[in-house]
Amino acid sequence: MSIKDWFRRFKPAYSIYNFFHKKELNHIAQQYDKLGIEKKYFEAVNSFDFKNIKAEKPWLDEQDSKELLPSNNVYQSLNKNAQNAILNWSDKGYAIIPDFFNIDETNIINKEIERMISESEVDWQRNSNKMMFAFKKSQKIKNILYNSDLDKILSLLLGKPVQLFQSINFLTGSQQKTHSDSIHMTTFPLGYLIAVWIALEDIEEGSGVLHYYEGSHKLPYVLKGDFEDGGSRFLLGKNAYLNYENKIEDIIAEKQLKKKTFLAKKGDILIWHANLLHGGNPITQKESTRKSMVLHYYAEGVACYHEITQRPALISK
Image (cartoon, rainbow, N blue to C red):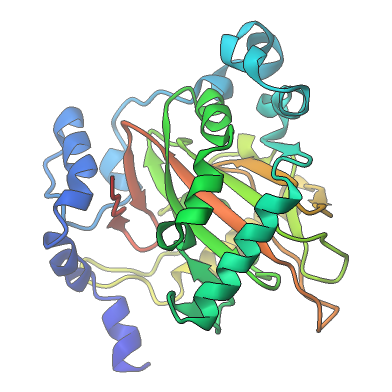
């Protein structure tokens, strides 16, 4: 193991970094005060810190969207495409809305991504094929995202106002193994993260298509303590995420979950629940692309952190 790899596992290093980002961690400090948790805003945090605290659930986790949404004023203000897509949210844990973004909007996003890469405005992570936080770098992309009905739909599904936390752009398939986003972007109470996947081109078989498991959001969350973490007071576990992935594979086999894939058309979106199991299929057509953009939103007024790295989430207003 290199010194760099070891340092990435060293929790005090994260705490020192966090100490100088108090403004972006004000949200977690407020939640600690509210919940009576004696912890500093810059310290490592995981689900054990909230273990004995009674928590609410998102309203559509406890009640049925098919029964509640039709009489909701926000729901009634949406177009038929969106209404039909989210009606079965409680049962499915996802919603597919065709043609949510038009051709002009998706073309603008693609051109902005190309421009930022060519002009080195962003850190294009070639080893993982992704660009982080493009919406913070491009006003054109931000205008498209914020001028849509996304916030309205996502806030309705969670029952709380939402804030866009991060975006990830891909040119090819991620090939990421099946996971729940709540291992990466965790909330207390659980369930107050929601994600959107945007197709920026027509997606074809063999390109590493997005896959998901309908209804898997109803399964218990897999968090620290549910798999071999291998960490200590000062170090993150060396194989923690690999052990997590293996645990998810075991659950899929045990529950005999059925995989679905999303062969999207340009402009289609898929919204998914914080605990929906999903990932990227292997790329079998080696020259294929899978241009896409993923958005992750936190609900306001909840504790936001990263379970696998045990870091509080840095949130800029």
